[in-house]
Length: 64
Image (cartoon, rainbow, N blue to C red):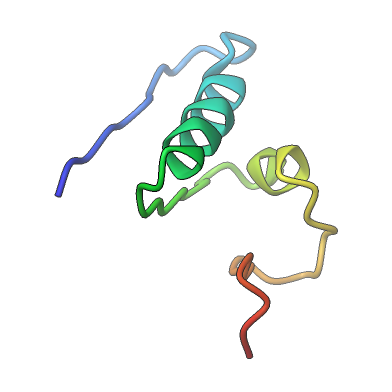
């Protein structure tokens, strides 16, 4: 298992964009990916096309 963390205290540095695109590329290459967004705005979910649901957990595989 490999862990990649993207962190910077300054806002507007592209952390979310890098994280979403890196996760998407890893998934496209057949890797299992867990993307955790600790930002209260939840922009990772938006970047993946997930509608806001009022919950911190989003299932992207369509499971129950």
